[in-house]
Amino acid sequence: IVHRIDKDTSGLLVVAKTDRAHHGLARQFEDHSVDRLYQALVHGVPDPGDPRLKGVKGVSFESGGVIKVTTRLDRHRHDRQKQAVYFDRGRHAVTRARVLTSFGQPPQLALVECRLETGRTHQIRVHMAHAGHGLVGDPVYGGRRKVSPAALAAGAAAAVAGFPRQALHAAVLGFTHPVTQERLDFESPLPADMVALMDALGR
Image (cartoon, rainbow, N blue to C red; front, side, top):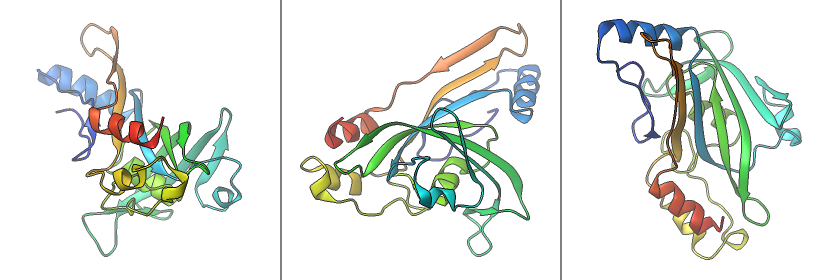
């Protein structure tokens, strides 16, 4: 296995069949040349115009409604199973996120596309929580907050509360074949459980 995705995250990962392929692929992950896009359902709507985001350390904004989160990540001081945001220790981590669609009146949740520049453990989950938009169903980083039932379609709030895992899907993976040098791009559609949740939200 060349890289891993979190337990209970759905979608794409790459496995090498030979040592040569493994080394070539690992090098691309190390130099950040692999294209990795994830889709996540998050609480709230990460809007670059939100003044609360402007006050979050490590958050900046790019064209096209992209929110960039740049921090360091390291093990949590008190819970060694968790990662935490730091600025004076740990490994450099960059996530770019943009909203694909939102749900509710007023909006309560959003489907967000997250592009990884780096691939640290739990990176998207930690970065989105740091920005105040934790993932739906995330039992570790506080994504189980309540939504307003009145703002959503009937039964949708219960579907959100009952979602059994972090709503995170590895949707796109692109890299150069380590032997043939052919460019390879793969896509994985949203899994049935996330589709069903979005249907309940009234997409």
